[in-house]
Image 1: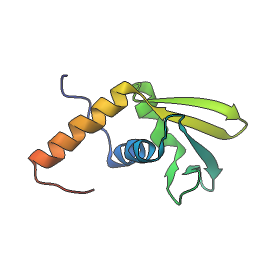
Image 2 (image 1 turned 45 degrees about the horizontal axis):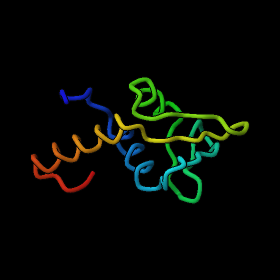
Image 3 (image 1 turned 120 degrees about the vertical axis):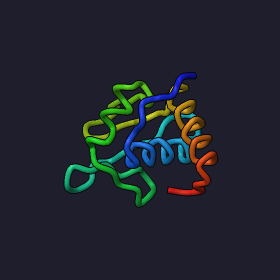
Length: 97
């Protein structure tokens, strides 16, 4: 795999949260104040705009099962991106963001 386009920290955090909480059926994001979305069942909130680039790069798939609710799944490309990002972090001696 060639080196993927670098994402902002917020986008990587979004991918990690989806990966950590998805049990195979996607995760739900509910509307939150100030143009944000909250990961259902958690305190993790992120701006709506953060979903745009990962979606355009096909790292996530976004569905709209109900009005205002987003069902988001990490794609195979998204998993590959996270694996590559983890390799880069380990190579540079970083253990967390």
